Image (cartoon, rainbow, N blue to C red; front, top):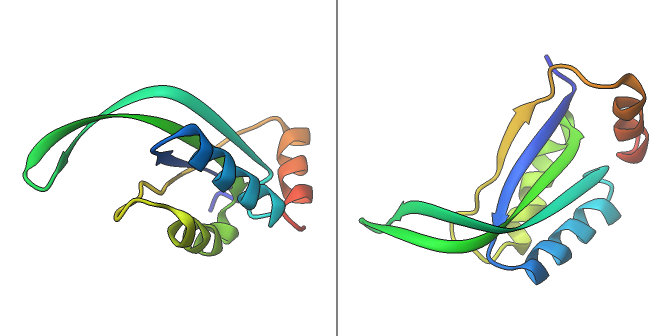
Length: 106
């Protein structure tokens, strides 16, 4: 099993993204969070296609922290059904992966 993951989470605006990113890093649930603005999302919601401007958080952490990270995002996120998707990091620069481990409490 992969030890490190990247988690994607969309948010409605930059302020929400900044607040959420800061909290995740502050609580050491993530070593780093990138906030990417200016994305447009198309999706089905309540039987119709929606189009919204959003921001994307790219969260780097350890797999074992996902349940706690997911719970924290859900408690702070304004969406009824927030996107919280984890992907494994299959390979990475060893010093960077060591840094993720160190910054997330191990």
